[in-house]
Amino acid sequence: MAEQRGRTAEMLAVLLLRVKGYRILAQRFRCSVGEIDIVAVKGSMFIFIEVKARRNTNEALESITAHQRNRIEAAAGVWLQSETSQNFAVRFDVITVAPRTLPTHMMDAWRPGW
Image 1 (tube, helix red, strand yellow):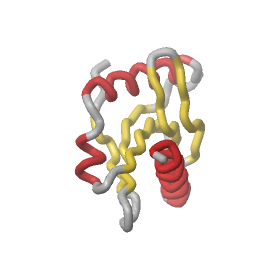
Image 2 (cartoon, one colour):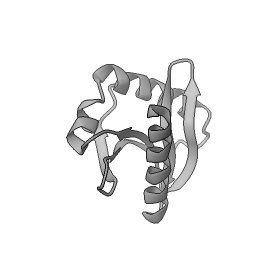
Image 3 (cartoon, rainbow, N blue to C red):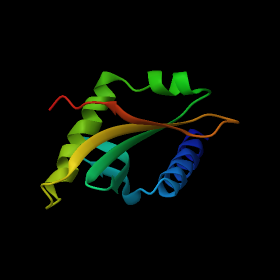
Image 4 (tube, rainbow, N blue to C red):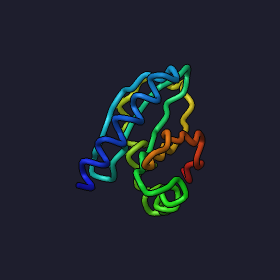
């Protein structure tokens, strides 16, 4: 059930991002150091997006721990090593999905500790 809820939340997040003009480059990117729910690009920026489905937006935001952010950042580093463009900026976003509400997109949710 949680797996299905997560996949549905990611689908809604992808739809929201496409409507907002983002191009989706990868979904559920996994490597040895972590996982990224969605990798997108808009303009000259790579955006790494964590999607959280919870009862409300606050619960979703609170569920992203420092450890999880570190793993997402590490996975982003791995993903970026495979990219050839050096002129792109990087941003970490969060999209929260709660029942009976529209998804919430928090841009630049945190800065990496690189």
